[in-house]
Amino acid sequence: MRRYSFIAITLAITALLSATAAAAQTGAVISVNGIYQGGTEAVSNTVSFTANAETATFTSNFPVKSGPGFDAGLRVGVRGAIGVAIGITRFTATGNADVTAKIPHPFFFNQPRSIAGTANLSREETTTRLAIVFSSAANKRVQVSAFVGPAFFSVKQTLVDAVSYTDSYPYDTATFGQATTKQVTKSKTGVTAGAEVSYFFAKHVGIGLTAAVAKATIPITAVDGSSVSLSAGGTQIGAGLRFRF
Image (cartoon, rainbow, N blue to C red; front, side, top):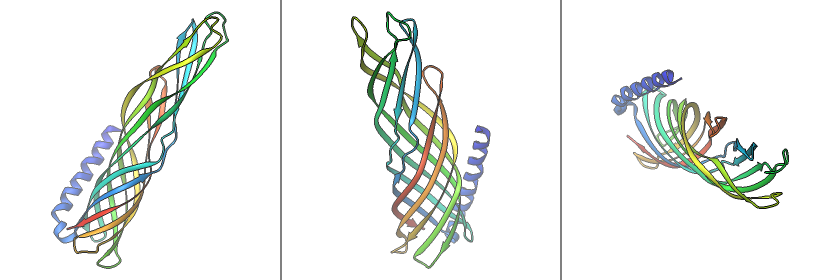
């Protein structure tokens, strides 16, 4: 997968650099957008550990909610309506994860005690996209574009890796203490596609609206070696400035 990703990046960058040389004839557009990215599937993580000579478990559930982000890109015409583009998107989400656990009784087997609490977790996504662009100019001021291509995700996700608790005689109940976390970083290649409409109120300056979908599923490893699946990206709606050259 990494080999193919490298080849795709190399070909796209070569095309972009070649197209830049022809920008005076075919045109180039820089975009700077504020975006709103939709939420993705919750990150659910169940970990097993040993307590009181039995197997204990805790489960955390972190909803990755919708929120604002930032996007910037460069689009360069190649020939006619066809162009190439490179861009970067940044998105972060923080919030409380629900944490539940079952702690074995110190005296009696198969009588786990349930505890519950919360932990503050976060998600950071940086997505670099390379795309083929198809553009159509309705007139000198309005331009409509569609794009598709690979998206390269770098995701930082915090996970719960331990839970503390307190109990006292006769140990029939336990109380949630706190959850400790660790940050995991993973990269994966996905896909992106979308469209935008730009309106240039001056020769070189305009505004634009964009709608896109960027997706990747990223497997990561929890503290006990179990696999956790992250759903990265999502639906993105944005608006911002356009600079035409």
